[in-house]
Image (cartoon, rainbow, N blue to C red):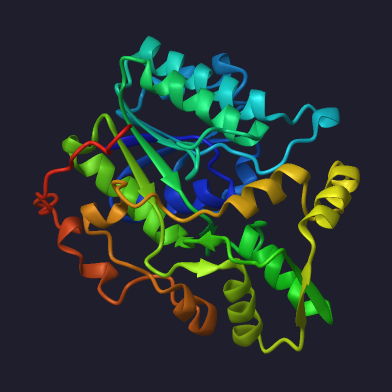
Length: 325
């Protein structure tokens, strides 16, 4: 299948491009800087998602589209906003797919967007989802939790934490540190995308993507310290102090967290109990602990999964709509 992938040089997009290519798909990769995509054998398209005329001709060649563009923090003074890069970008792509006849569409959203959105990040993600759901496309929405793995040159939540823990003799968690996270690997997310492309019954479904190992934030920090052999000591920082600091300093690039990022962290990122997840697609599970300790980011049988055989997918368990979606 010829698949058009946006955000192809990003932390998630790059791994999806690589995974689809390895599994026999032809990939058309939209990149702001094609030289930054170190994956051979893909068609690279230079363009800005906010300027559809630059990439619509290449989208026309595709049979499916995977939308991976997203940001964790906004810098309005640089023109980097959630409204533009989450909502307007999605609206541009959905309209372009309808215009050129690309019917199959997979959208990378965010776990937690199903709650009442209280941050600009989540509100823009919810608006983007609504644009997708109100379209006539054969869409699938994926809502990943915290994503780890991928390129060491790309910033991520876990990489940022490891970097800070390696340098700091003491490091704070906020409040009790009991907010829960379900880290998911780039391999599992990319494999979920692949299986959604393989399975027609994922059309019109919302699938949450989270790891089997769920950690409180404090436990996750302890695991990072243990696996890295760091000497860092943890201490509890009152939430209101960090919120005040993030509110004042969060607009500066060098400060690691905005007030909104702190708010989302405190809300946790575990999967809703009754949600459809990648487990129903029988995506092999990656151990977050094994990745930290041994760098293992693929299941032992990844190269010989039956779903990768030329006969097509063998998973036939039916998907049921998520309650309340």
